[in-house]
Amino acid sequence: MSQIESPIIVGLDIGTTKIAAIAGRKNEFGKLEILGFGRANSNGVQHGLVLNIEQTRRAIVQALENLYQSNPALKISDVYVGIAGQHIKSLQTRGDIVRQDAEIEIYKEEIEQLINNQRKTFIPAGDQIIDVIPMDFHVDNIPNIKDPIGYNGVKVGANFHIITGDRNAIRNIHRSVDRSGLSTKDLVLQPLASASAVMSDIDIEAGVAILDIGGGTSDLAVFYEGILKHTAVIPFGGENITTDIKTGLGVLRSQAEALKVQFGSALVDAAQANAYITIPGFKGMQPREISMKSLAGIIQARMGEILDFVSFHLKQVGLDSRAMNGGIILTGGGSQLKHLIQLTEFTTGLNARIGIPNEHLAPNHIEELKKPMYSTCIGLILKGYNDHEPQYQQYLDYVRKSQAEASIAPTVTSVEENQMPEELKPVMQETPKPVRVKFWDRFKFKVIDMFSEEDQVLNK
Image 1 (cartoon, helix red, strand yellow):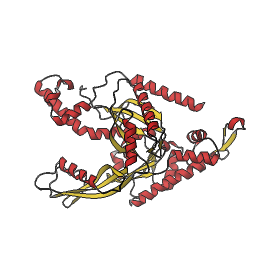
Image 2: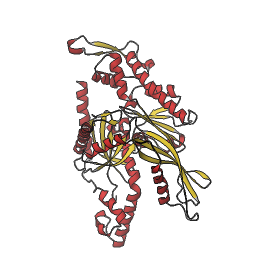
Image 3: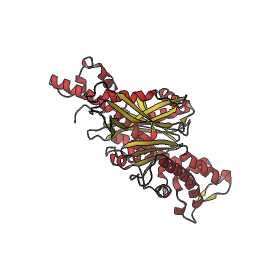
Image 4: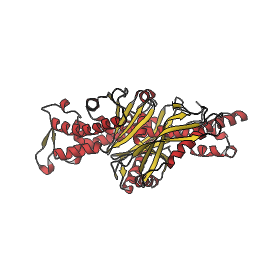
């Protein structure tokens, strides 16, 4: 294998219940090798919004410390960060540019200009554009073009999906990350990150809805015929279910969370009729018995409400069970509820399955990272590569050309920086030196120990 290796990309998922940081690098087969992983309980975040910057900063620092413990050789300066919350909105626009010479093939810079023009779209005061996503292009009278580069024509245009968010909410995320000693490379909408981690090209073509059930919100992304058709943030998540159980059964919040995780079912009919769970009483009071049917009834009511929102959004964009051949992919921590697939299929009329982020992972990843709750973080790393690879490939081509001309052994450090074109110098600076320590076994067992300790605390 060549010594010229891909850069290390880090995804940071700032959630309502957890903050996760994962470092990864693509191998020669295009699969992600996980180089480090850290997690911490999240404080200061509610319904996807950073409300307490200092508490969030401390949680990010704790997640980073755990990541460094898993692999001390890592050096991290910037991260790709997920964003969600009820403040997220989306709108569709259309833009065109008229070309000076129709005989010249359309080139990349023209498409970049077309996309950047959409950032001038009028949006309500107090909001900020997070991302501009082209859905499909058209050149003159030719519609539904996925990639117009190389076409000839007078006018090139596209339909766009623009994602916006509250300016103050975005600023709070940046401040939390900055005060943790990191810089935000880019903000990525969480359902799009999760989607990239759990679905394949076949899913996008068939038509699929990705439902990422997080702690504070549930995020929806809808794809049809290879195009992102719709995004939405549903203002309910796993924390709402926990609150419902706490209120409905009159238990402590910690007990409600444990009941949901260990005994919860999203389907009343699947719960055992005469089964009861015994929980300790308060301060010496008699233990209480909780009906499994009652617990399932509370969970089904809230999950049914979330899934009703999904059906509503699908109808809004004119997609039904006949169009969505790929069905619904459930991911996020809340997707691990028992019998959720059955409830989803019953409520929406669509096929459903759990999406785990192993589609793009190299075979040597630990089992813990295959859980749906890490879909967003894995997707953020993929987003980083999507942004970085074109320029990085240009950098590699330059390095190889220089090496060939010098007739020397292939090594990145043999290319002098002062000989490099100005536009490629940032890539060289951003590209970390290869981590060649034999970290894998050490990293794997440290992460397993970390989760074993958490399980021991939960079971006390």
